Structure formats: structure tokens, C-alpha cells
Amino acid sequence: MTISQALWEERVFKKRKECFNKIPLEWRVPDDLIYPFKKPLSENKNDFIRANLVPKSGILSARELKITENYTVRELIAELANGTLTSAEVTLAYCKRAAVVQQLVGCLTETMFSEAQERARYLDSLRAQEKLAGPLHGLPVSIKDNFHYKGTEATIGMVTFMDEVSTETSPLVDILLKLGAVIYVKTNVPQTMMTSEAQNNVFGRTLNPWNTAINPGGSSGGEGALIALRGSPLGVGTDIGGSIRIPALCCGTYGFRPSASRVPNGKMRVCNTPGMRFILSVAGPLCLDLEGIELFFETLFATQPALYDSTILDIPWRKVGPLSPKKKLRIGVIPEHPIFPLHPPVRRTLASATALLKAAGHDVISLSTAETLIMELNEVAMNLFGLDLAAISHVVAANEPIAPAILHIGTQVERLKSFYKPTISPDLSGVTDKMEKFAILNARRSDLREKYRALWVKYSLDVCIAPPAQSTAVRHDEFGLAPYTTFLNCLDYPSVVIPFGEVGEVDKGQKFTLGDNQVAPEYDYELLEGAPCAVQLFTTTLRDEECLQISKQVDAYLNGKNRVKVIGRMFPIASSRMGEL
Image (cartoon, rainbow, N blue to C red):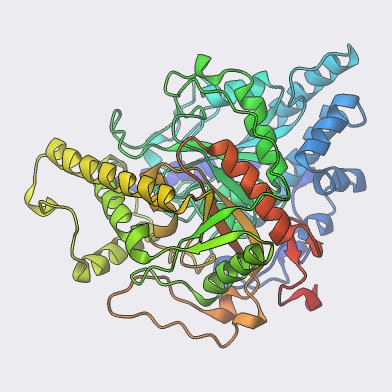
């Protein structure tokens, strides 16, 4: 062990101890709660949601369990506004639940339990004067670790940023506070924030509460896991290649990636080179229902967020009413790409959703691989990401080990290079000047976006449906590339992930063999049985409002009837394991 390695490990040990000590003794999970489960948790299949561990911990009262389990975001807001619930009791309930969830799956970084309860008491004093702080009065909201919150750290799981206390608050968090929200926890991310894990050397690994042996998604993986176990009613993540939508897929929540430069995304901790803005990161919500996501946008945009953040466009949230039940949608279906094959449950889920929409009377248009340009857009995105190596440089400079998930992505990229012939001309491998590379890539990106515009017009599309990924959540560190979300970041199309069913008996026995010219995670039915499935919907740039309204209608078709509730999400009756629940 080198001296520098010993120093950073000592700092990490101290940091983790400080974090743990912020959990009050009376909120500590008893050892016998976890004792029956197979260890190590990250290597063995354990289902903490169906095991009902949070209630069994005995830490939350019956009323606190009701608060955290029986209300949607809109219902909570209404009860807080009319005084049926106090901000103090709601905040305490979610602080306690988040503390329990943290001890189960390791999803938190910073906790502000005392500060949150103090703010809740202040909000209750306003309510006693018949005043409300704002439309989110008293609502606990969790935020991803890269958001600054004054007085806490924003390490984003990197040793190089440890011990740097934030001296200001990110604009989006300022707005949430202005709206009356209570910020009480920050959530875990992957090293460099560029993988679909939530594992780093500072805070460790976040587990998926549906199955501790599979990944929770990333980079907003801590948010996904926290919300899945109802440790937060509404969370805010960021997305540059799928970092909101993949955790939503993996953890069975809803997640919305808005168009770039709409939601405040400035003054956050980043690990890239300042000014290197190629594909823009966006901030967006994760929630257990689309109504909560709609509330997030409606209240946020009412504040004219451009007054807080100079990096965004001053575009209000448009009032787009619910779609008429008689409205016939024209839905384009993104096909399975031959280079990025779909696991059997993902293929089945997309086909089932498409069939339901078609049966409901909508026009379903099967698009071709050639015209949907999945590989071409990913090629541009990967090359743009490769122009800035600052993130990995931070890791190397701190002498901390590179995360396994990053190494696995490198392996997949090398496999891809071994057989894929680049479509960008001239060959980028012969270009050394970064500005010249950027110009070539930007021109190619513009060409592809123009082709998508023409595609949309050609078929008069309202929306497209696509798989969120090649797989559901998979074994830790093996998720790899994210082709079915990244292409939308390259296009800058708003997109939403809607949970729909799970891996079940109907998938058993289905074979998945990876060809020589293909890239995908390993498929293991026995491991993945019970994992959440989902679909992804998207519209064109700045049509976020339409994307949300169409998604609400599609969600009603997929999940609105014949549902069975299991803690965090609804399962359609048709799901293959319903007889066991």
C-alpha cells in the first residue's frame, strides 16, 4: 500500500464514519433484520421490497408508515396545505425512512436530518399563521450528490473533492426551497458519474432494493434506490446519457429527462473540464407516479427559473391539457438494433406495450434500423464524450482505484471497435486537434438531427416508444453501454421511462446468445427474475409538455387498470409472478 493510498483510505474511513454517526441511535436498523439474508448482499439475490423490511425494522410508527406509503406527491401537498399533516411529522417520517433505506442499500451521501426538521418547524409556524411558503410547502425532496447545498459536501464520490464544503446552493435547489420544499438528503452516484452503477470509493456501492445482486442504475442510482423503497416522495437527478432513465428502469420508478437548458442545471459539482459542453447534462425528476413529475415541472417553471440560472432558456412551462380519450396517437416504434440486441424480457415488454397501444386504437408505425440511426448517434456521442478526459484524470491524480463499471465500459467499447466501421468521415483516428474533431462531430450530429426531423415529418409522429436499455438491471458493474438512452441525449429529445411489469415465468427458457458483432450485458434469467421492466417514450426537442401528457395517457393504458400494489410500484395483473404476491 502506497502512502497516498493509505491517506485517501483513511480519509474515506473517516468520512463514512461521520455519515453513519449522523443517523440517530434510535433510527439504527437492528442486526437481526438483515441477518437472514444471504451475504455478501451485493453478490446474492435478496429482495428487500417484497420482504417489507422498512416496516419490519420497527423504526417508523404506524402513522409514519402511512405518511410514507399511502400518499402520492399531490396528495401530500394537499394534506400539508390544509393542515391535516404537519411539515414536522412528514419530514420526520421521511428522514427516518431514508435513514433505514440507507442502512439497507447504501443510497445516501450527505444527510441533513436536523436542518430539515428545523426548517419543517419553521414551515409549520408559517402554516399556523395561515401562510404557505410556496406550492411545495413542507414536501421533502431528495437531491443527487452533484447539487450543491450550502454547508454540505458535494464530493460526487471522488476522493479529489472530499472535504470541500459547499459555500453556496445550486440554483435548482434554491428554487425548490423558495417553493417550500424541505431538502433532507443527497444521494449516491458512480465514480465519474458516467456509468450505470452507483458505486465509488468514497461512499461505496448502492444496492438495488428489488434484488441486491443487480445494479440500481446510474448515475442517479442513489435516487432510484431511495425512491423505490419510498425513502423520498420526489427526487432530482441529472442525465447526460441516461442517468435519470436508467435508474428509473432498474428500480421500477418513473424518470423524466427534459430537453436541455430548460431545467436549471448550473452551479453544480462537475468533474469535467469547465467550458467543455458538448452533450449537455440536464436535471430532471424521479418519482413513483407521473403526477408528481408534472407537479415538479409546473411549480418549478412558475418561478421563471431563468432568473436564477443563466445557463437555461427562459421558456415557460406551456399549459397542455390532458389528451382526449378519442385522440388517436401516431406512435413510432424504435426497433432492436442488431449491434445492441435486447434481452428477452426487454423485447417482450416492448412488444406487449406496443400491442396494448395498438389494441387501444392508436396507429403504431414500425420504424427501421436504418432510419432510427441508433448506432450512428451513439458513435457521435461516444466520440464527444471522449474529447474530455478530466474525470478519469481526477481519479488517477488522487491515486484511487478506477471503478470496475468504468473498466467494463472500456472493454465493451474495445469490442465495438473490433468490428464496427465508423460512419464519420474523415476518419477521426487521423485527427489530433480537438477543435477539429469537435467540428466534425458537431456537423455529423447536425446531419443526424436533420434526418430525425425528416423522419418525424414523414410519419407525422406524435411520439416514439423504445426500450430504455438492452436489459433490465443486471449483475453489478456489467450494465455497460447505454445505447437506447444515449441516442436521445445526442438528439436532445425529452424522454420518460414508465415502469411496466417485471421479468417473470414467461421469460424463463428464452435463449439469449451474443453474436460476434454484438455488444450486450450477460443474460441470466435466474438472477434477473423479478427485476422491474419498463418502456421509454420520447418526443422532439422542447416538446416536453406533450411528452408528459402523452406519457400519462400511455401509462394509463399500461398500468391504469387491473393493478396490484407492491410498496413502490404497480404491477399489471398480467405480470407472470402475480400469483406469488
